[in-house]
Image (cartoon, rainbow, N blue to C red; front, side, top):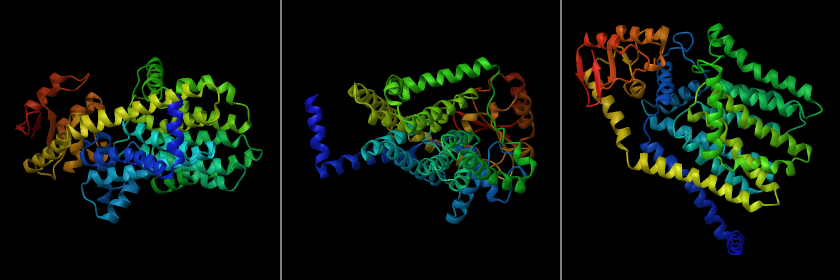
Amino acid sequence: MNKVIDFKNRLFENKTLRLIWFYSLAILAIIPSVFAVLHAPIDPDSSYYLSVVERMNEGLVPYSDFPIGYTPVVFYIMLFLKSIFSIGINYEFFLTIHFILQFFSALLVYKITLFFVQRKDYSFYAALLFILASHWNGGNSFLLETPSLLFGLMSLFIAIKNPHKIGVYIGVGVLSSLSFLCKQYGLGFLGLLVFLVFFDEARWKQFSNLIVGFLVPLILCYIIWGKSFFVVIGGNYGNHNTVIQGLYSISDRLLYLFVRIFPALILVFFYLPSILKKKNEIKYISMLILGILGFMLQFYFASFAHYYLYIIPFSSILLFLILSKINKYKYIFYFTVFVTVSLSLYSTYYNRLYKIYYKLPEIKENQYTLARKILNTVDSTKTLYIGDIGLIQQYYLTNMIPPNFQNVGYTFGIALDEKSHISQINDANYVLKFRKDYEFNFNTVEVKKLLDKRRKINITNEVVLYK
């Protein structure tokens, strides 16, 4: 143990070694992002979002001309970037934008942690852990969560830095509203801000300004789109048959958070009684715990890994805040934080960078190859229905649209009910499917009858196109 302490002291007393250490860690965080841009397969959700941007680029207006299930801010930001950089179908460009926004979010994690702990090294480690843990929990794809998280963290940082100011909360409210307008789950940041303001003596004035700021962007959206916009306010939260299933999903994902992503969080509750002594400590630690538990409610509706992206920054900040406060049994906590970071390094570098980006770059190459084969075979002005969710990337890569687009929008095969699925097969000029049958809970006999009426075009060994 003394040798470890001696090594640590020598490392951080030497300025050159200290710089090498921190630059090495920074590079460690950047490398997976670079490899992801070059080799990560195109994500189904990303394909949906970017296909919407393509339709908007053609002059169509979401909500008015075609339905979407999400709030609009990210689509318009990406449309703006697409326009000024004259970008065509280019997933790599938008994935690069995603990582830039993710690193800005990491900067906010650093700034918030620094405000709490007053230690640059701990703040840097919190930001590093945020990047690594995010990468293997959906953060290696272009998603709405990333810009939503950025706006949300900005609102929290400003509120934390200006706890007694009143006027600033209008801007804070606007930022939290933008987080919500990037993705509906960003509403959680408004809840955290409301929690913070009620610790201040000017709480009611701050709360009023916060709500005014939050409502301004929503009112503008209503002026632009009318009632059709507010259909998406409730969100597209997936389907659970029972409350029990939803609660089971939350408990299962919470266990995964503690065991697989942040095992050090288990010890946090052991140390809390000795730490919660001052008002500010109670306020900020409670806010971080509330952020973790509050955003866990997403899992009531579905169990997607990228839902953790809202939770990871609060977990990272909380770990190093606790580490900065404890004195007894500190090395036990050091060890669990080391295990936590090691798990993220393993999952990022071995499970993602090595096993997928390095060993299987052909997954992404095959996606592009399939798109080229489809476009060489079909009339791209006709409608294409993709009957398997594992092929959704082709909506973006071929830039073709499904049938009944003005009423249905982009359709996701098994995400539809059976009636809609069959209707889309009937109406499409082309239907793209895997050779194997992946329709869960659908009448596959009825679907097969419909497809047998069409001419089968063999595209690859795995994929068939029906005309």
